[in-house]
Length: 338
Image 1: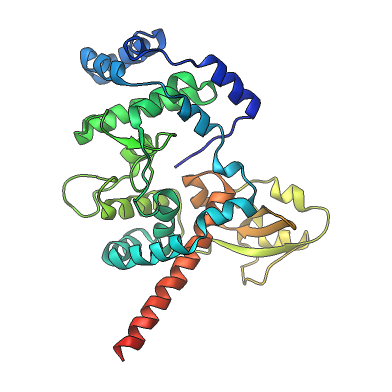
Image 2: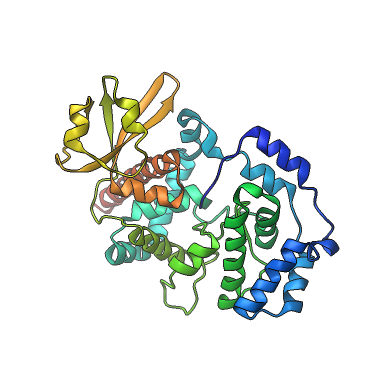
């Protein structure tokens, strides 16, 4: 659900200093023993059980390698084709057909349209097909104790994961996910799973691995909690002129610029946005030069899922293609019915 960059130089240094201890040694590392002590004292975990899990876990160098070269480091013209593919678009329309009721209920409950929810699941896991093959304990332990740039964050996520598996009655060694510790069809990290996942079909459990309805409802709930505006615009194309463009781009992804102000600074759009609408100026790298968009609150909310404008734009553009394919299917069905 989130990715981080480090330079090639730092990645090389990390690889040089993160030799994997044997499984028997893993639970004996001082920092891991300290972590287990905290889990016993703060959350009442059984010490022997924790040691058993840690002994069976493995530090994986391929996790460090993967997190050191995220797709979001690519320019937009290389990143976009990864997700804007005919198979992913058609897959989204099929997913919409298969889960129409859950998607409609999610929109009614949370205000997030079906095409956005579907696009998230399409970008994250191709609608649940590719949920990740890394054992969660291995990925989280590797990042918590062998990845200094984000060690504190991933130790928190390891704590959240152990709490989650206890709450949900899951074997922590049995679950798989991404190299960054995201899991299920929606690729929630552990803290997000505990906080935002919902039992959307009312079967008594929150299952983001196998239950599409739970994944749909959980994505919608996450977006609502992050400030999604029902019926709001996501992003619109823009043209720019003048020498004040970079300063506006540098303001970041949060929409803080009034539309009236960006117009005065040389930004134009054919979209009918109110003069007091808050926007962010988004710059995307094309081969022939930069491409500009105005992102509104709902674009910013998508970046809360993955804090990259490339990711958010891929989700938005895929959602529009899925919507068009869905509407085409409806039109074809209506014609066939006649």
